[in-house]
Amino acid sequence: MALSYKTRRRLALLILVVGLPAYIIVAIKVVSLFDRPSILVELAVYIGLGVLWVFPLKSVFRGIGQADPDAAPKPYDDER
Image (cartoon, rainbow, N blue to C red):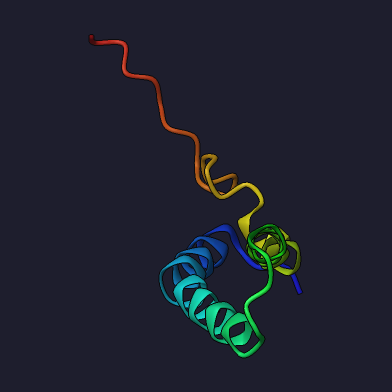
């Protein structure tokens, strides 16, 4: 089932405003359960978790910054 452009934009906004902060909180809690590793290992874990969330959601964010492909083309304004 393909999502429409408008639905993907709304879903992307919801993910960024609600889902990403929740993911960050969960990632910090999970890492804090273990004994503190060296700073390089901890940095690698946070970088890995920071990139990991993107892969399942790539299809939602693809093309969001572009114009709506389903919208009717706007007529040019020649009276400038």
